[in-house]
Amino acid sequence: MESVFGLVGKDFAIVVADSSAVHSILVHKTNEDKIMLLDSHKIMGASGETGDRAQFTEYIQKNVALYQFRNGIPLTTAATANFTRGELATALRKNPYQVNIILAGYDKETGPSLYYIDYIASLHKLEKAAFGYGSYFALSMMDRHYHRDMTVEEAIELVDKCIVEIRSRLVVAPPNFVIKIVDKEGAREYAWRQSIKDGSVLEA
Image 1 (cartoon, rainbow, N blue to C red):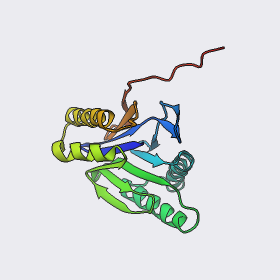
Image 2 (spheres, rainbow, N blue to C red):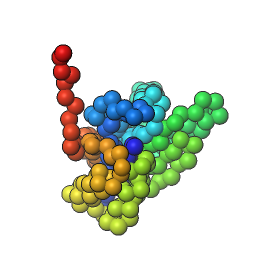
Image 3 (cartoon, helix red, strand yellow):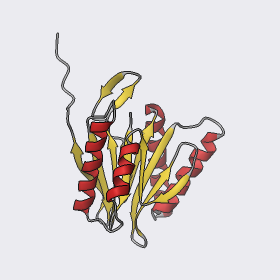
């Protein structure tokens, strides 16, 4: 029951993801960070099979770093999105990745941007996006309350509304969420929204 969503504000972009690692009917952990920092000004939220998600996001992260190392300049957010789409499209005809991606970044020339990339390599530049079962509720809340020039405070308030709605409406709702933001200052973790915490294993 994964939930990943994001939005673009006035001069920033936010990506939010649940932090549950699940398989079948089991919850393995509730503090899994599904939003990867690609470089200083890009973040990638991903949902999908755990192995595909971890392997593919790390593959993109290392290739973004390799490009900057070879050329001395970082990829733009748009170029990173197109590279990611190309890799998914290539894999689609060989051994497809079951992974959906929300990519957010900040560029000096163009400002913040957000890209929606699904597992069949469909790429769209959007102002708000969501994946997973939680998307039914997150998209509804964002359709109602989102506007293009939101401040960080307004965006976080909307994010919290989305999380509350997911927790209250989704039959098997993830308890914890991580929020990350990217702006001219860079990409960073903003906050966690936790209703339960992983406890240490009790000794027999």
